[in-house]
Length: 70
Ligand SMILES: [Zn+2]
Image (cartoon, rainbow, N blue to C red; front, side, top):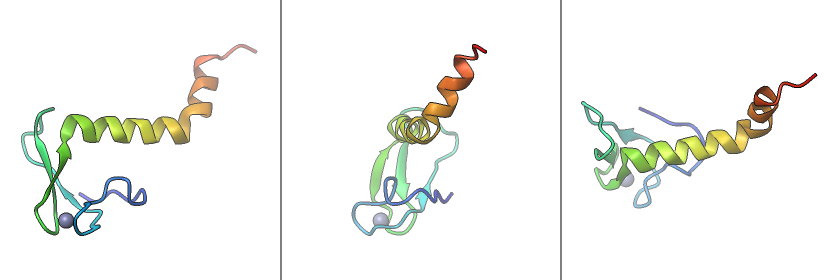
């Protein structure tokens, strides 16, 4: 799995943006760097970081959808 969103999700050790997602994927699963195998974070934290990034980029648009007053 590759995530092309800058270096936010990349491996701190080697800088690779590729991560290995274990299967089955549970919240406590450890996400590892695809390149060097270093443990990066847990799936729960990873997901929260992605969610925060999405809110940062899509926030104004999303709140406009939520507040759909004419
Ligand atoms: Zn790495």
